Image (cartoon, rainbow, N blue to C red; front, side, top):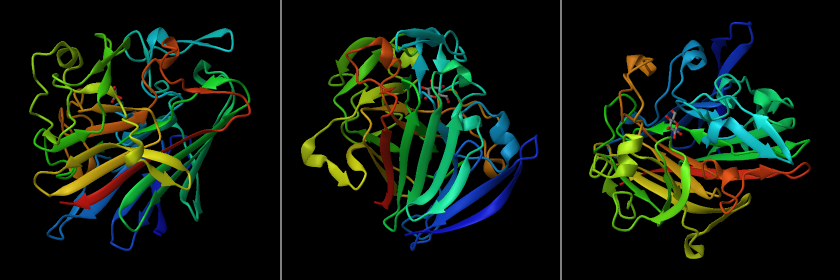
Length: 358
Ligand code: BGC
């Protein structure tokens, strides 16, 4: 059980105050969450030598969160990842969403994304609870969507992120978190020597716009085979069309649902999705999710701006994301699991990022 503290984190342009909550557990591991955009702002833990390391990218002030477009640590909604041409067809109706990523919709829209919303925070026995109600028609999405997200930190250094949403009309829902991890420490440079393992045998092949083309491809024999612990940089620049198109890893892997590895929780079952190791710190990350897919993204589009915490420079590939999600553009592929929330149902997801030491 962690202790929660709260501090001022500045104001939005309209004067609304923003807070930074920090959950600290018995080991001194500390998770900081910003009420603007529900961002994971910091995750400090100790390496094997007892030195403190902040293993996530983040910013020092709310203005940077307001203006940035890299989704650093962001809580993503209503629909994580891409929707082709922003065309949403649901309940027999068509809705045109913003095309904010070339010709396509990404991560809920530039200003309508949940990373650009101020969340209400409440300290509860289940951790920090953030709530936001997205009005019917916000960003042209149908239905008023009431969202609750609980961030918790257990005494075994697991960050749990639990999502629930209800809507007053049928709608799409695919909430996720866009934390960039760097297990050698925020601002320590490239993640290419850090190791990654994905518990996945297949990925959704994508086109040049990072939209799935419908093919579900076995990773075996390709540079997408990360079933064994592999330095992130070993194959990232291989001459392989999927990697060339996305400028590195930026794909959706299908989480293996191996029942012998299933982890029951009071909030439903999760499956291992990834394991990673910081080569310099020995800090490990093991991630689990109830979601069917994971976007492993290696910060290919980070460009050094804006500056991060303490002046840290977030250059290309200086962090990696493990975005637990429904597959991208799933509504156009009815054979994929569907991120649909029906009126009256409760949409739920749980993702766990557990830190350890090698
Ligand atoms: C996408 C990337 C995109 C990034 C934005 C990822 O989820 O797959 O293509 O550039 O988010 O930071």
